[in-house]
Image 1 (tube, rainbow, N blue to C red):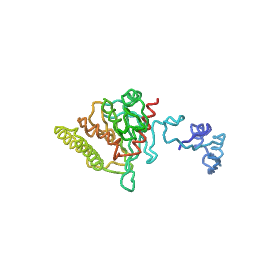
Image 2: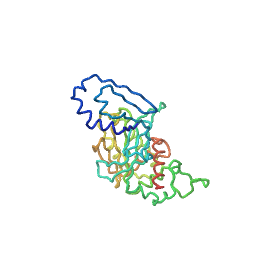
Image 3: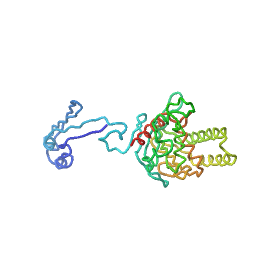
Image 4: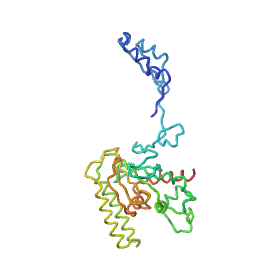
Length: 307
């Protein structure tokens, strides 16, 4: 909701009425009436001194504002709001840890259980140095939102057409490069670090199992990953994360993972596998963490490609 007022109102606030407050007239009883006509609010005042200072009636207009402020050419608001939770996300932000400036690509709510409880909203941010160069990355030259939302297939009837990448493989191709990205998590209700820690751990263990089955991990990889997961778990203190506070998962250009809470660094894992795979859990071909986030990021990436 946004508001506008005509000039007499501001003239009144700047000085006219303030000087009259100490006058005898200002001590007289004051009565006000509101009249709402066509969305405008008219205010009439019985106190002669206040009425004279206004010179003319003033209007306060209530306008509905676009949810996505980037799509509203009249708005200068530097944030977007998740329509499911009303949580705001800055369009750009810089982490406490050394990292390039990051640009918001998309956001969405995470829901859990059959009751679809809204746990938190998440925003995906990408190194702004690469946002104008995505079309030059192999596999991204003809990208559309549907490419990210469609699991890969080897079928010759694939409408997306080989050799275009699709699904999770698209984001993996980005993370194979020295590109910084982050997921900013803002709880929609009070939670605790234990819940977040356990969710991240389960996601990484599940992806480790998939990689093991695919035969892409060596014994030394398995040992290193297990140690890295234990290190990650140690970052989260035993305390409540209040509604509206933010937890940031940063994957810096050199890889690894940095966890921040309200601008404070909780810890860093230097294992490249941990940073890449935790980011990929938000874009998985199966059991994605937030469908809304994945869909919105897909649309955001398409807008960047078409710039």
